[in-house]
Length: 188
Image (cartoon, rainbow, N blue to C red; front, side):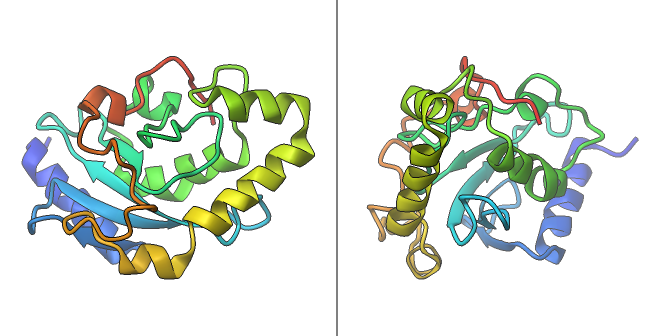
C-alpha cells in the first residue's frame, strides 16, 4: 500500500484533473477550496458554493474535513459554520473513497436527498418536513443571495473579500466540526 502522503498527492491531482475548479491555499496540497455547483433538477440548481477541504495527516484513513464557505439552506449543513453532516464522510469513511467521490457522488446526493429528521440546521429540517414548497423556496432564495457564480469566483478566503458569501465562523471551527461530526447526520 502506498504511503498516506502519496495518496494525498494522488487524490489532490485527481481533483485538479476533474471538472471541479480547485483553488489552492498557500500552494498546499492538503488544504484548498473547491467550486461546487448544485445538482441539476434540484432546488440547488444554479447555486455555486465554495467548499473548504482540509486533509488530516492520517488521510486516507481519516476523512477530509469539508465545509461550505458561503451560506446554504439545508437540514444537514450548519448555516453558520458550513459544517457538513454526512454519514459516509463522518462515520462510514473508508480509504477506498477519495475526494472525487465526495464531490461527484456524496455531496450531490446530500443536496438531492436531505435527512430532515436529524438536522444540523433545525429550521431547514422543520421547514422541509412541514412545508416542502416553502423549504424549496427558501433554498432558492439562499442560492440567489449567497450562491451566485460571479460572487463565488471573485471571492477569496485569504483576503476576506466576499464576506457575505464566506462564513464568518470559518476559523473558529475545529476539524471535527468542519468534518461535520455533530448530531445531524444524513445518509446518502
